[in-house]
Amino acid sequence: MLRVARRYVSTQAVAEEVVQEAWLAALHSLERFEGRSSLKTWLYRILMNTAMSRGEREARSIPFATLAGEGGQGEPTVDPSRFQAEGRWAGHWSTPPESWASPEPRLLEAETREVIDQAIAQLPEAQAIVITMCDIEGFEPEEICNVLDITLTNQRVLLHRARARVRQALEDYMGETTTR
Image (cartoon, rainbow, N blue to C red; front, side):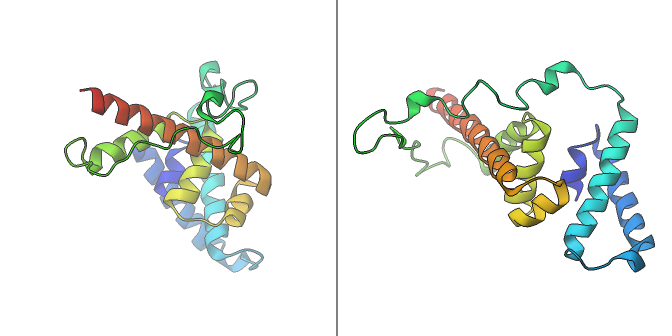
């Protein structure tokens, strides 16, 4: 819950307050829970509403630079040159990712996690929330759609774009580590 709340507010401390507020709101309105969704989905929806309200109060304006790339129009998710252009394998990856057979000399697990966290932090808000809920928190796609009030298709697109950017950040990092 803390990771999801953190996507909407500026500091860890505020995110912790948002989680507490969400729990209190859930406890106060538990008798109104109708069971149309799972308790988990209902609780996360309360969290999302609380976090969005708090985030809006916290910062009434959003820098234009943070909106760039949100829609992703005009730019491919993955560089097209990384795919086979013709032949039997057209559209498939042209080269597989580099082997991480012996990562110990090149990086520690904490460093890799930091690269992933930084990559997620740089994603547009919608992509960051979807990848956090799906790949880190373990939500099912339908639950994510219910909490975020988006279509399944939109959820898939956001997740694909987020994973592609995180993968690119990891590949860039692994390339830098190899050249050191």
